[in-house]
Amino acid sequence: MSNSKSFYMSVWRWHFYAGLYTIPFLMMLAVTGLLMLYSPVVEKWTNQDLYQVEQVTQSPISYTAQKKLVAQAYPEDLIKSIHSSRAPADSTRFQVMHNGDALTVFVDPYQAKVLGDLSISDSLYAWADNTHGTFMLGDSGDKMIEIAVSFTILLVITGLYLWWPRSGKTLKAALCVTANKGREYWRDLHSVIGAWVSVILVFFCLSGLAWASVWGGSMLQLWSTFPMQKSASSVSSTLTHDSLNVPGLKQVPWGLEQSALPESIASRNTETVSLDQIIEQSQTLGFTQFQVFFPKGDTGVYTTSASSMSKDIENATDDRTVHFDQYSGEVLADVGYADYSLAAKSMAIGISLHMGQWGLWNYVVNTLFCLGILLICITGVVIWWLRRPQGKIALAAPPKPKDLTLWKQATWLLLPISLLFPLGAAAIFSVLIIDRIALFIAPKARAIFK
Image (cartoon, rainbow, N blue to C red; front, side, top):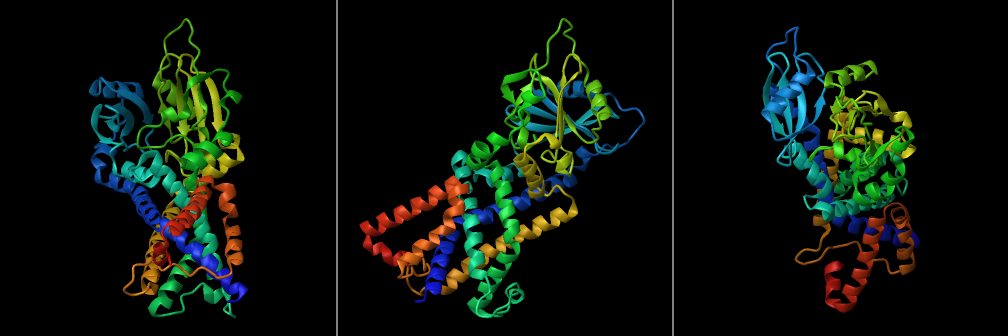
């Protein structure tokens, strides 16, 4: 076997084993991604009696009065925030914590009545989001998905190498399916779709990893979070911006989640400013579509936020978060996209694109991408099924090259994974060790892994 052929087989073997672990996760991520993309649209369409008021008049009641209506309807519950309406015919939405469950409570400001509520924590979106992020397995599932996404980077690198045109085949021809039957057709379909979506796939991997516990939460986010002390003279020692989120829904900009919240300065005058004053002041500052989070405790603050994370706005570069003293109404901190670190700016744009926040074209691209990922996974399984030995129990992995030097050289493809994604690198080397131990202890297992 020639050196180039041996290296090709080495890369193919890495591609196969990475796909073996990754395919179930990629299919799950694609399906739940589609559910997260369209479930808010379906929810609004099927609950128009809540999202829309029956009649618009010239005299809606104040926001403070609307909050009192919610407090009367949910006397034992915590009212967390209010969403400003997009249009006069929209009802006002409050977020309420009820027995550990987050609810959206809808108020008709013209008839001064509570229209009803919908669960946030038990919604289809929350289920899809939880599955998308943790496989419904908590922290362990989060790490398993982080490994799968890290392996996906390896799949892209090895896949592009295997797809790259050889033997006089042009790049233009390699971007089209030329075979029309048999395993060659499925292989062409698999590799061509993979080549077309490879760049977007890497983008989705990197932006998705921003939420992962190790790469995102423990590494990247720690050094890219905005230090609130730069803007506020006094900050909380216990509360962060993440405390503004509710179960089942991320609303706070990614770069602010781990930053401490500012604190209000209690004075002799213990009366707080009204909600209407805060909303009016927010609009004076330039906010149009936004939500206001209510103070928590005596030192809590009003927080007005407009971000693509909460889907209030589409353009992440318009992200803005302002904190107000609950007693004086004074602006304690004003943080916008320009104040983010480079990593936080990148993630703000990346996450908004990942979530389909940039309009119709973003919806279409994300939909086609998810369908493309499903097709890549299905065609990968079909290719394996067609090439497996008949009547034998075996993985039918690509044969290991006899020249182990070249097999080891292929491990250089793992260098980006090792440097950037620690969980992925740890998993790869663990598999290599287990593979060696298992085959040494049980030689009969060799037939299965061939």
